[in-house]
Image (tube, rainbow, N blue to C red; front, side, top):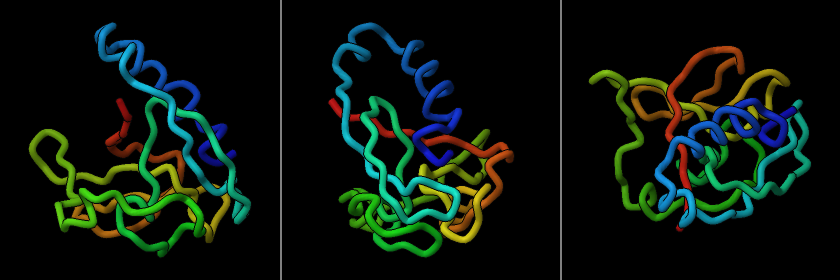
Length: 133
């Protein structure tokens, strides 16, 4: 079902949003995010999200495992800042919202060393979500 119908988007991120302080929740605004439909489809869907995972191109500025059309690179990553995220003090994989273009049950991830990769949607990885005020 890609990003639009993923449990991350429909269940987990809304639950995280509900745990945020009221003044933060009230300040976060919906943004339109473009993502391929998943299941090896290059068709781009637009969703309105308060919390979202970043796409491969928003992080790396290129598409290695995802389809084109999922936004543009964020200035933070364009400036050369680290893509490595830590869990309990150690570098760890983290999910992107980009479905992998080469398979129907995988999504793109950022590997523990900061490189682009992909993995099966059933695996547990870290989450570094974005939001806008």
